[in-house]
Image (tube, rainbow over all chains, first blue to last red; front, side, top):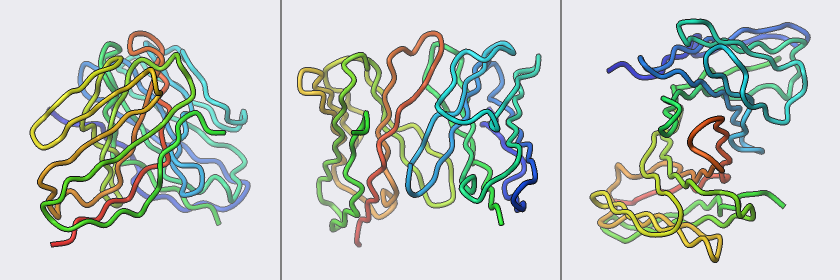
Length: 111
Length: 113
């Protein structure tokens, strides 16, 4: 059974640009959550989607947004990038009644 | 004060030692408790999860939850160099429905051969 996949794995952008990250959950998993991981703040919850609806949202500014498609694949978008957005962005999927399984992450560097 | 506190270490022990990793938390609504292991440049890998208070054992790993003290632990017996990684505790208020994991800072563990 394939795990959670995330693309791209690495990304370099400059301040002010926007970026879109993609996540494909484990087959049969309908819930997708996104987390930001930084050395200073650790892992922080961004948002969670289930059946194309955002069910939960963390304390991040509106520049961070996401969506989920009918096949459960999800994308997150960060607009007007700031240096502090440099982080590992992790996607996790679950069946909604089970624990979350993480992908390898996308490492975003903002210059 | 953070909802979940975890000593970031680093923790270095000899091979074969028993390792104890701990987290404390302040939110009494947490009901589900997880331990993840994260190797460098990888995503977190689920090791153990427990519901409410009690112990759970899986091979060399034992997870303990004491809700009265708001304290959880992970014990690793007969530690191996391959156990060297960052260990993250995570908690949530509800597993069914909307999910939001709250993580500790992670403890970096090194097992020396």
